[in-house]
Image 1 (cartoon, chains in turn red, brown):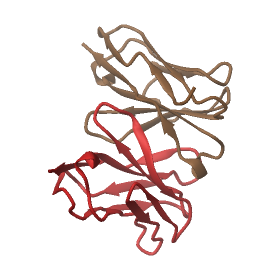
Image 2: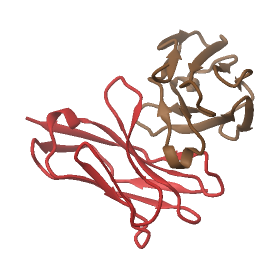
Image 3: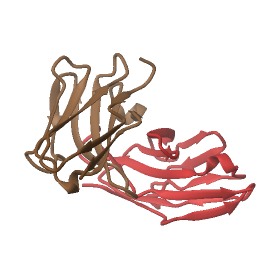
Image 4: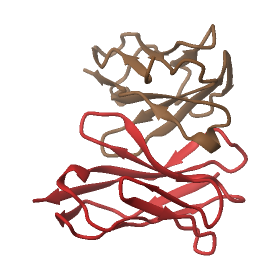
Length: 113
Length: 115
């Protein structure tokens, strides 16, 4: 099966700092890749996605580029806000199946004013 | 509805009790998934339905766990003879077909605490 490895947290940044959360995957072929965000007490929300190599997903100032050479899908944001404080999960579809998302362990982000 | 709805939001069960967790997916979504999320961890796959057919139940941790979706919309996850290790948040998600193109929409989850 496949797996997703995320940068371990927690990550603490000051407002307006640059954010990178690393994510790498192992899979057969080229899976679709996703970033989800989980705010306190809530379910997971889809943040962005990329379905093929070299695609860039973007939403709410966040970006991630599907890099098949490095099997990576790092999440970036140029200027974080306090409201971005949440847990971020990288995910991919399992090899041999297009219907099961496999998640990383999550990265807790805290942004201080 | 507008989103995936799960009930109850919180459930406390005594060890050995049976529990039933409900999921109302987004109307028209063919695919439905159940995940288990332990504290501080990423969600772990439990089972998947396409309409009323349960196509993958490889993630169910034991035969105490059972899921159904008899009419292809609402789904119920049942846990029999609950154990302390079953304490977790149970997430339901739905998706149009194929999920690989759209991703999932998750509900807010049911937090199960077994005491």
